[in-house]
Image (cartoon, rainbow, N blue to C red):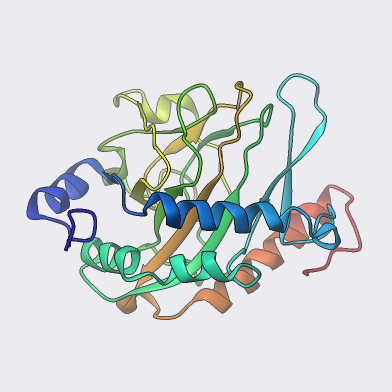
Length: 259
């Protein structure tokens, strides 16, 4: 067993509990990453999916010109077999199960392409107070391309997760004000291909836009504890699509569908 296949150590688990995040390097080999990279490239050729009213996809805007830029597939594993294999890979499920101290269930999956010029994401927590949204929601970010400050890597705030939900539990997505994390020091987490970053639903985080000429593809796989609802993936996407339809409808976007 290699170091990147080994269970999380006591030190890693203690660090995760204290800081609210964990980085592990070289979880996936160069060959594994190359295969998934090719699969995610092939998805971009499926033009029938790349419509703004398809609930599977989302678009960003160029941070300077405002031009629409394709951003992500959510979900992705039902159209990408290698991505699906990673979603259920014992290395990831095992680590999620360890930090949750319970059997981990896959609940959400997406691939973010973050091409050159794509905007970033404001300060937020992943937890949204839907009836079926588990507080144990834990995300593992897997780097397909190298991510750094130039192309908009994730910034999080060690220790801030301990405060729990930092917004109203009203079922809406909330952008957090900067003073929410004024007592914490942000850490921008650079990842190389095959590295992973793990954090829970209450970790405040954000990312800058991609101001480089390089892509920043990464997979985001989320898991929940067995005792916190069990297999909730279908319920999650039903609630998520209901929320998207409500949000997009308010913006005047009609003819929404999922393909």
